[in-house]
Image (cartoon, rainbow, N blue to C red; front, top):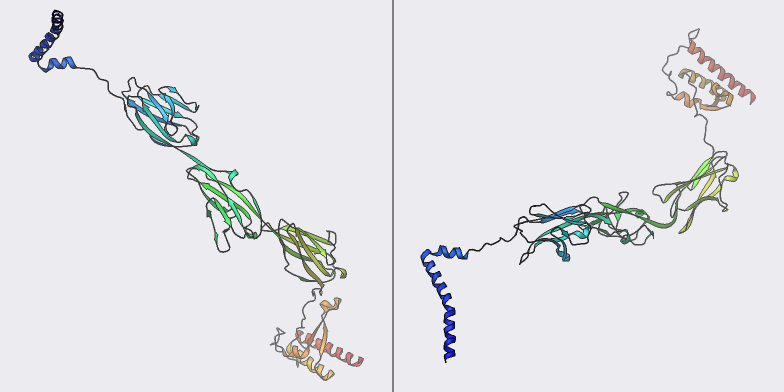
Length: 447
């Protein structure tokens, strides 16, 4: 019991100082009010860091450099880190670069802004970037980097030049990369319309694939695949489509006439692809070679699958008349056409019949004399002195000439044949009449 009493006594002694302190505090509180209490409880606090500006969304063409900014106030002892959110990759912390990407760096403006630098931007750099402060509850803000890439045609996934048979179907493909995704359109290099099928033709076709049904030789040529996405430059790829078909012939003149001793040119037009082997042959099949007798030509025409063939034969002899063949051959087939050369009369070089201009009254007198000699109208052969050397003769019917008032410009002239001596014109007319009369008499005597 004594031990227990001593123990309680010790406990009371220990609590006494504490009780005194409490009493003193209460007394001070009552004496000085709440101001004294506030002085005892004041504690210094540090403000949390805050973001000042947004990072924002940035668009940059591939190949350029870009800089993202993160501004923080009251950073204190906290740290700023840059991260690529899409890949959960830490890029930088304060002034230290964490990523191994050599194109990425970080800088500080010695105030409150931290810059993330990306050089030679690639398309894979696009995405959501995050600036983070390592407070107890991490503070974060985001910005998006858009990377635009000009279109690029992927040759490995696109069609190359095509060779097809006429009448078959054709499918051309064009693949392109870029950001935004490029659109594809097709057009013909020469500006012609694109024949999709027998009932549909268009100036341009949109889509990665161009399909043409039952293609013909008219569809042969270069096609352009054009890729664009609003980011220059627009790019294109040329795809050549060749349409193979056997030769065809067109002969403008299958029957040709030429006189002996003249030269003549025969011609054929061919269509073939691949280009045909063209030559000429006689009807017995013997090939004609260029010589002093023959000249051959084979000239490309438009479109490229057309050819113009000619064969010129010089100084035509009788053995040159007959049939000639123009022949065209290519890997798809062969064909020939026949032209027949025949003998024709030489072109006339004689002047057209003419009449001697004689006054009307003289013609009437001469007609009367002619009637008196022969008993009826007849045709006289009048030699024109101008053509006498060549022996050219012109025939005129006296009655027809006498009746026609349109043969002379002097038909209305008035003559006086009773006057003597006659004037010059009358004398000429009289001499002509006498000459004709004498000719008539000579002919009568001979008979």
